[in-house]
Length: 236
Image (cartoon, rainbow, N blue to C red):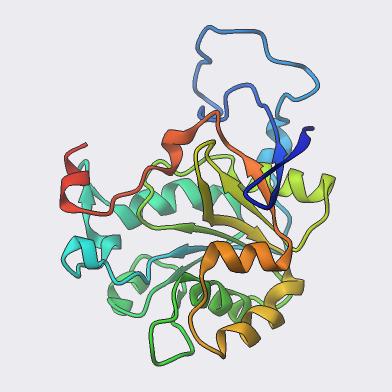
């Protein structure tokens, strides 16, 4: 299914697929014939394991967006939270939203809203810890709310990497930089994450490196990780 290399201290699991940017009903564009040994299994992509929960990380402070809750910022006519749900919901049996603000508004979407257990802001890893607490014994698939084109095959490719090369977690690399908020974490890391957060906020990339996460190559679709950080990004 792939091969290993090293980038920035991380073990990188490189997987080549036919065209992971396409939904099942999309017609593939003309191009080189795919390698049959690395072609994605559509059925496997559609049937994630039952002990999996996805969490949309919508608890950021949105400082570069003027303090606005980015989940409710509209991009191309739709709130970012709706776009994240549309792309992540098919990838896991359960879905929750991590946010400490606009809780009632998020709950109206029909999904659990998870709040951090700490009074002060401790970053996105606190949202992942809240997901572990809400779904005991589950692996956690995470993605930020501000990436409206997040990969449709995120869970599939991260899961395949972990099945081939077991590790506590797998995170994405877009070919240019690490994308640690797009990750799949095994339930065994829940206790350590909660313990580490008890000492304060954590640098996301450094923490994943410390626990021995592997990094999965998504360089075939770097545009999937483009995020909306500032009002100027809304013009794209």
